[in-house]
Image (cartoon, rainbow, N blue to C red; front, side, top):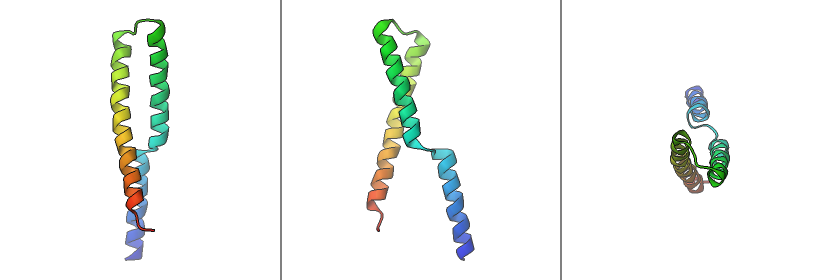
Length: 80
């Protein structure tokens, strides 16, 4: 039974890294891109592609913030 549980644990870790990934890194990258677009917006009008990208970034950030919040909530509920 222990080897089966270990296998499940390992596969869950792999899935987490591949599917969910490092949310901190993703958030930081999206925030940097959003800041860049915001600075460009202050100096000139953004193209429609840039405006669309800005909307996509905002949407992705909201999703990642929710995932991160959920993760912290789950960790806070874990029994130590």
